[in-house]
Length: 321
Image (cartoon, rainbow, N blue to C red; front, side, top):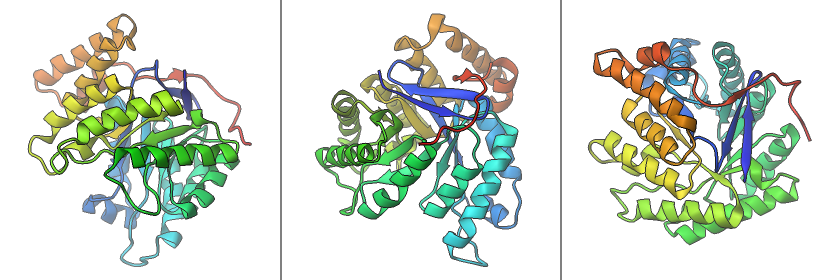
């Protein structure tokens, strides 16, 4: 069984076929969040602090950290993003013990995050583009970390799932050339919006099965992409997630501060026999009882539920190749 190990200084989370579904919290990302972007440029981090604490309370096992702010005062992200990434990583890991996912399109920001992160973070991301492969894979090898592999290349994003599979295969093979095992590759097969492509759901379920059976890799996705442009997006997302889990998907980058999606994941974990004796489901049911009584989900989660997922344990430092 393929297992991808992600660690903070004190906590280990394993992404795997026989593990509970790994929820990667997406909220610490200024993309499309003007208020957060403005705060970050001003050196204000109260929203980051709130998002970190709430996401972990609600069940995020890993936190994605993205520092992609285009400063009004300096539009060059190669200059502004690396120091901001360092500051955000240090802040977040000082607040929570969840492992981190370092998310950037700027290579300097990726390395800055890797230098600042304690433990073994997940790197987000590499693609099949030649330039990206040549820059990111050496970082993955140098810091001995797992990486998200997104199934697009120099030709863009294909609507053909077979093409996206071949891009994933290419990344896995190129990673192997650098001494990076398939267990350290978490493939994002790219979820298309079902409102624009009626077969998008069926496509990704088939792709996930193929990636698992033929490449032996773990998988992830931006879960909310499936419902983009449609009404009642939470309802679609909460149906999509357990279907993806049933197809073999092992993680998702998503907003955990939504009880309907988290309820679907908790139920799917139990039905897949990834929740021993239903303990997590019973704890989550207590959270829902409080939510139904009017308590906000993050507050109910902090009061009623134990920390979600992962195996705790201290490490002696990052392993490097």
